[in-house]
Structure formats: structure tokens, C-alpha cells
Amino acid sequence: MDILIVDDEESIRTSTRMAVEAEDHYAETADSLEVARKRLREEKFDLLFLDLRLGDDDGLELLKEIHQKNPHQLAVIFTAYASIETAVKATKAGAFDYLSKPFTTDQIRGILFKAQKALKTQGEIQNLENTVVELKSEVSRHSPPARFDSSDPMMQGALDTLFRAAKTPASILILGESGTGKSVIARSIHENSHLADKPFVTISCPSLSKELLESELFGHVKGAFTGAIKDKFGKVHAADGGTLFLDEIGELPIEIQPKLLRLLQEREYERLGENKTRKSNVRIIAATNRDLKKSVSAGEFREDLYYRINVISVELPPLRARKSDLMNFANDYLDYFSKQIGRNITGFSEKGLEFIQTYGWPGNLRELRNVIERATILCIGKTIDRKDLPTSEMLAPQEDDSGVVVPGADVTIDELESEHIKRVVERVENLQNAARILGIDKATLYRKRKKMNMT
Ligand SMILES: Nc1ncnc2c1ncn2[C@@H]1O[C@H](COP(=O)(O)OP(=O)(O)OP(=O)(O)O)[C@@H](O)[C@H]1O
Image (cartoon, rainbow, N blue to C red; front, top):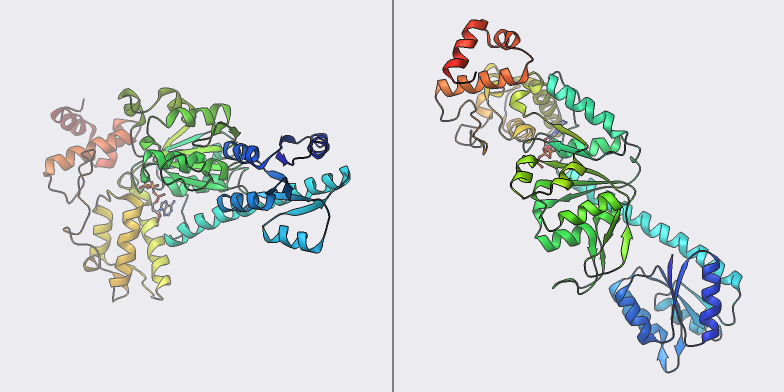
């Protein structure tokens, strides 16, 4: 522990310091409230020994000030003589314990032991609070149980790599379009890792301004920036010993990137506005729907950080490229949402099925889930019909940012055919297999690809 001893009697400061150091803790002393205030502004101490009376000054005043900023600060009050009255006063002011002078080394040792236990409990409570926040957001998303099997070769490869890497401390980078399940899988990696009983903490990189994001990550001290009204520990501290999930890492401002790199390499960081170097040992899982290599070339993402987080990198395919898994998800969602509203919907009508299977799902699993949830509410029969599913006007734009052409969009049949051929060829090992899937012979495939300038 880092301990500050505040007393105007030199002999008390020295004897306490010796007792503290003998137990392998770091100790500093202050002979007045003024010096103590200064040190407390500069540093964080795990425990204070604070004299009740320093000349004309009242130690409890300082304790009140500290507790306004940090209600969890542990402090032990030294009193010249023990009385019920001083004990009550000290406890009311939020003291953790009190000691009457003169005291023995054994008494100090006992207090140090108790304080360490209290700090551990505080840490555990903090972890529990984080878990509750995570669970709340999980529940609010009220997602059906996640499915981690696949008959799609690319997804199988991705899952295999991810779950093998889960057991190691390696950093993992998950790539994929929005809604492909990067966050869901990140949590599952954590749950399947050796850190499963440790915290899993998420930080969403694009959701905050640069300053707030930095503070959210590393924490800050009071006054570090406008609005920093009290000291705060960040998510790096909360995730210590566990997993820190950096969602949308591609959006991490370039100014913060060296600090993250240092955390990954040296396991060190500082809170905003503070000089003290702190340690945190976190396993990083990062996700992005950006092409990080392009961001590196464009000077938006540091190359050294890219290599550091890219130890294991896996791309989750979009749903439109996992056609063999599509109905498993659709049926899971249907089952889950119809049970949730107490309905017995058994499946999809022919037209309903046709829509599910031919639509391009640019929003991936998230869109599929939302569409099925809505359909179960609207459905009045036993099966989900086309009319329960969104009309083309209601659907997400059929062409995403990357210019991907999907069925139902304002595209020509030639464009659709070309896109379809391109994707099938990309995902299978050879043209023979691609031709078989496309239902044409190899020569026709060759001709078409030539016409479309794909060869
Ligand atoms: N393995 C899965 N099994 C079942 N449903 C899933 C699975 N993965 C994702 N989903 C569904 O898709 C939704 C979106 O998933 P998630 O938030 O993980 O996507 P994402 O790739 O992180 O998206 P974004 O990039 O927008 O943050 C989830 O809330 C869940 O309903």
C-alpha cells in the first residue's frame, strides 16, 4: 500500500513510518495539514494515518475534505487519548479506525492488515459493479442465446482460431461488418479464457470525445479538465487482471494511441492530470469494422499499435456470406422471441422463408434479430409470413458504405450476378467448386468472369 502519515510530532511520524515500512509498504510523512493537502492533490494514497490535532488544526477537517472527493479513502485517526467521544467523532467523519497514542508496532500491524482487507473488498465491489453494468447492458439488449457453431467454412475457421486463442494471453483483433457479432464473441472469448472469473470491461471508442475517452480509459484526477470534479479511476483500472474490450478501435484518436501502446507493452499508464505511473495487467480484445491496414497507410492508426493488437486477428464474415447458417439463426430468434411473448409460432411461410433467404442482410445478425423480433409481434398466424416482414421501403439501404450490391437494391441483374459470382469465387478454394455452387459449368464461369473483367 501507499501510505501517508500526517502528524506534527516527529517521533510519531518516525515510529509509524518504521512500522509501516517493516511490513513492506511505501510510507511518506507530512508534518502539517498544508503539506498533507499538497501531497494528496499530487498523489493517491491507499491509507492515511492522520492526527486528530496538529497545533490548531483539526485532522477531521482534512478527512471531510478528502471524503468529498473520494468517499472510499481509508484513514486512521491518531488521538492523544482514547475516549468514546473522539471515537464517535472520528467514525462520524468517516475514519476507517482510530488509534490512541502511544501505540505499539503490533497495533499498527493490525491496522495495516485490516486496511489491506478493506482495499481488497473495495476492489471486489468495484468489479461487481462493473459486472452489473455489463450484465445490465446485456439484459437490455435482451438477446437470444448466442450460437457459436457454423457450417460455413470461413466462420468455422474464425471460431476455431478465436476459441483456441481464448486460452492464451494473446491480444485478439476481431474484424467484421457492423452486426456480425464481434462484441458477442469478444465476451465469449473472455468467458472461455483463464480470466473468466475476472472482470470483462468494454469501452466503446467512438462514443466519447477525445478527452472523455482518455479519461474513461485511464481515469483522471480532479481538475484535470473542465468537468473533472473529482478523482476517477478508468476502465484500465477496472479491468486489471481481466479483459479490456476495445470496441471500434479503428476510431481511437491518434493522440491516445501511444498511451494504449505503452499499456500493452509496459503495462503502465497514468491518469489524466497525474504524474504517478500505475500498473495494470489487462488482456486486450479489440474489434473494428474498419480496414485497419488502410487506416495505417492513411496515417490514422499507428503501425506499431496495429502490430501489437494484431497478434491474433480474425474476420467474421457478413451474414450474406454465411447462407448455410442463416436459417439456424432465424429459427433461434423466432423460437426465443415467440416464447418471450407467449406465442407458439412454428416457422415461416413459403414467402416469408423466401424473403429471409434472399434478402442481403446488410445489418447482419443484428438486423436479422430485429426483423424477427418485430415479425413475431406482428404475426397473427402460426407462421411468419411475408407481410410480417419489413417492406422494401422499411429496410436498411441495400447498398452499404463499401458499395456492396445486395438483392432487392436498385441494382441491375448484371450487377447482382457479377457480385454473386465474385463472392462465391472469393470464398471457395477453386473455380470448379465455384461453378458447382453457381450451377454453371467451368467454361461458362470463365466466360462470365472474363466479361466482367474478373480474370
Ligand atoms: N453468435 C451469435 N449468436 C446469436 N446472435 C448473435 C450472435 N452474435 C451476434 N448476435 C446478435 O447480433 C447482435 C449484434 O451483435 P454485436 O453487437 O456483437 O455485433 P458487432 O459486430 O459488435 O456490431 P458493431 O460493430 O455494430 O458493434 C447481438 O445483439 C445479437 O442479437
